[in-house]
Amino acid sequence: MASWNPWHGCHKASPGCANCYVYRGDQRRGLDASKVYRTKSYDLPLRQKRNGDWTIPPGDMVWTCFSSDFLLEDADEWRPWAWAMMKVRTDLNFFFITKRIHRLADHLPPDWGDGYDNVAICSTAEDQQRAGFRLPILKAAPVKHKSITCEPLLGPVDLTPWLGGDITSPGMAKERALAEDLDIPVQRVSMDGILYRPPDELRWDDGQEQPPGPSMDSLC
Image 1: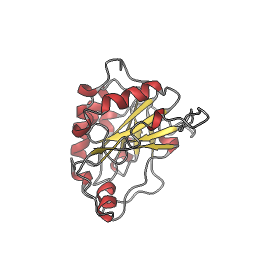
Image 2: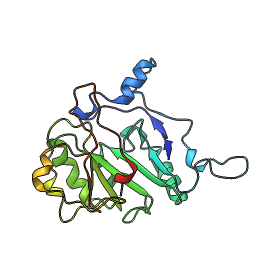
Image 3: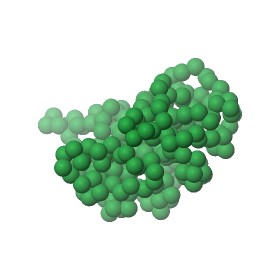
């Protein structure tokens, strides 16, 4: 597993950003997380060791842009190169979470088609209002691997309109998610799978406790 942050910094976009871990971390270091800049590891997927091997070995899952938002407006100039690196490294699996899924359609690479096989996109839905706005966009988007995260969860979220049929999770026994279960905390759902995975432990966001991060076996 690798982490790639091609740019750093973000702007708070919704209530789920109130206790952003990037802002808290930068504040502890005396930095301003609202200042967005391209990082020194911008080209990390293409870096090689002295012996010619890739710095990020083939087959790795690459958590992408977790110190910003991949679809952040400030990164529009840099994003085409990031897409290009993903296209070159078809031996890696890239995964990013966004609160700006509404910007995706206008910022896809020309050769995107119905999606890159090695790119998974996750939209947050921290409350019902955000779910109602973002998830129809995600569901209709030309993305081969889609998922939802309800973190930080700010209240009950009913995902019924975007689910249906048997819900399965790779590496786990087939599970059935009943509609009445969907008014309790839900961590991640894949709409093209479709997969549903209840978190092992999830607390309401009180400004201190944050829900657990993504787990490998919950990704499509």
